[in-house]
Image 1 (cartoon, rainbow, N blue to C red):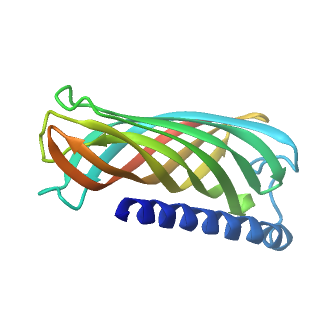
Image 2: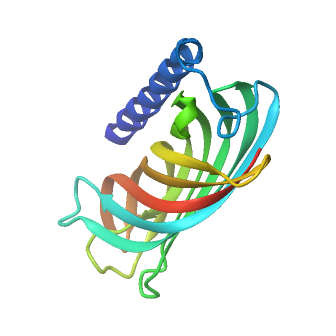
Amino acid sequence: MRHTSRAVALGRGAIALATLLLAAAPVSAQVHTPSPARTPKRGGGFWLDAGAGSGRLRLTCTTCPTVVAAGGTAVTVSAGFTPARNVLLGLQAQQWRSSGSELGRRVSSLLAVVQWYPWPATGFFMRAGNGIVRGPGTPQAGGAATSQGTGVGFALGVGYDVKVNRRLGLTVQAATHIAALGDLTVGGQPADDVIAYVTRLGVAVVLR
């Protein structure tokens, strides 16, 4: 039951943060005068971004003797609609893949996300998401055996948009994904309450 309560807590935290961002959006829209060159359309517009960058995975569990960490590459694709000038809603799919052939690990996620521009004229934004994550567990550092687990996760991130033309732009993104993958058995050894952390820094192409 430990991993179940941890997953519920993670999900509730992400939902609460997304609710606060949406509640603050109308206030921000009144206080700031947005610049049309950098902010999303007033409402109903479709948006899409796709990017890649470096990512790092950390795996912990209550029965693991050490924390397992590995570097790799994270690819992210997001799409949705624009309900307000400084708010985007959509879905985000991300896959992290280990750069070491001996690890062979992948972490995949599908999240519902909200992206909020607190100061629209600057191009700065915050993104929060909540959804499903699938990833590996391993009982020890350098262990060859892995076992896939599926759990609930959330993501928090920030970014900065740079407009190229009316519809196209570039954005720098940094984010952390946290997921509770549950109790796994890896190579005959227990890995209880596995938590996966994926931290990424990348650049994406944006279409709005």
